[in-house]
Length: 294
Image (cartoon, rainbow, N blue to C red):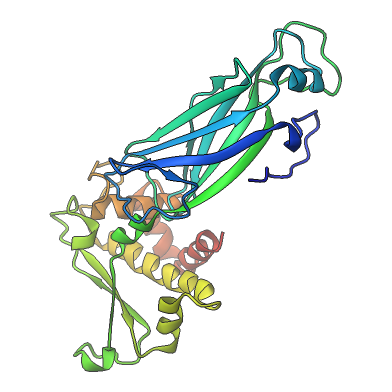
């Protein structure tokens, strides 16, 4: 796995000095997967355990970085989810020998969509010796990194999807491409998301077929559909007088889903969000496009 190419104002660890074999990820009690591209069994209530092992010639690397003998390097796993605008990292593990294992546990973290993992080798302490002008000096300075992305299929549980022939349904819109069916009980916002919503795709629509078939045009269409779905959910949140950003509705609930969507748009106060939407509804659409198209 290739490291990410970056330019730093200090010496870094060359790629050829690092041996990184694989990511090991386990979902709940399932057997670990190696370098998984997707986790079809993931859900909000599943704990993710992530491990990575890296090998470097420690003494040679320290000399290459022109660091003092008592300098300390470390390894940490960082994670990011753009879908929920959340991120975090494991506590750095000091590199005491040539091979170092580091672990990350995600339990109850606001995840969804694509989970991006990064293994960073960082400077923990530059040591007490004289510092070369090219040496890294700041604790936390990234010396080497590699990334891996995982599609959390469980994200679809928030938006359960089904296909149907809209012309055979008595819904009044036979030529629509998709339809978000919402049944939100404002007195039961702690109910699971999949009990309150369903995304229907019209199997007779060329656009919907492109999304279902995951062809070359499907990716762009999914973003358009996602913006539309998010817009409808956020407007539903605006219509629920009892909805609050402060209440813990529980991970995986409809209330939590609405909170995550509003946080994604940098709204932390539902009343301010409602007011901003009333003053200029077009800004909501622009924000959605900006977030979805990242």
